[in-house]
View 1 (tube, rainbow, N blue to C red):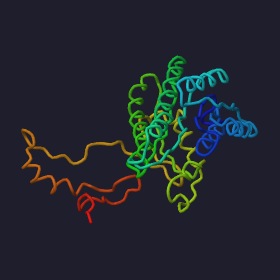
View 2 (view 1 turned 60 degrees about the vertical axis):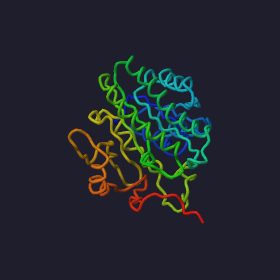
View 3 (view 1 turned 120 degrees about the horizontal axis):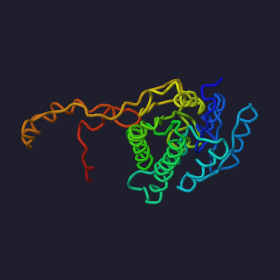
View 4 (view 1 turned 180 degrees about the vertical axis):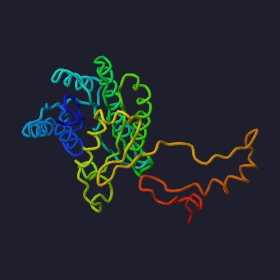
Amino acid sequence: MGILDGKAAIVTGSGRGVGRGHCLHLAKNGAKVVVNDILLEEAQKVAEEIKAAGGEAIASNADIGTRAGCEALVQQCVDAFGHIDIAINNAGIVRDKTLLKLEDAEFELVLRIHVMGTFWIAQAAAKKMIEQGTGGSIINTTSGAHFGSFGQTNYSAAKGAIASMTYTWAMELAKHGIRVNAIGPLATTHMSATFSDADKMPYFPPENNGPIVCWLCSDEADFVSGQIFGTGGDRISHMVQPHYGKTLIQPGGWEIDQIRTYFKQHMQPEFGAFGMLGKPYPFHAGVKPPVKA
């Protein structure tokens, strides 16, 4: 018996890398899987791998960059397996450039695949789950990049939006028995190979993210919703929801002179690790324009 016996799942962008690992673990734990990838050949390879191991899977190349494609993918799962219980938003794309070089098309493409694709899949899947009346689980994919990542304005924005959508959907869908969580996976993939200094990083097996995803989708995890976890490598790390930190109170409101008196003394010590890599706060000495020769 597997912890996902009887459940049907879709995984976007799962022809390779992290998504492939999700599919293999889902099937190993009893789920029937729709392997989705824009590259149909890659999706078919994963589906065949699952079937060769005794599982059930079909391949799909539905385009999750469109509403029609997302709705078709959800319907494929229902048509093939009779229902949908799990939707895993894994598909992603990068177009890395710094703010001053980033073009509209590159910004819009990354947001469409990550943010709109996640929204369209979640909405279509949730509607089916509500219609079925059996609840379900949605797993989104965010990243530590939403803490700030040099050269990734579009990707960071997308991953931050996905984190916020995860919190919101968990609140909205709980009454229907639908749980919504997210992971920030650590993995060496064709996408991570585009990052600067990727060749200097250790190898992180993409499939190491699969077990926690499977468990989060199981009924055993019915108490987990609205949470984000850093996964992969040797870790399961709870990404704490953003919240207000140190707060200064001034009855009647703050005036400039009062801010000048108290802000530096009480707030500057709070400026800690900065960005996805958690480097020490770099701006204590000030951010100033370059000195002209």
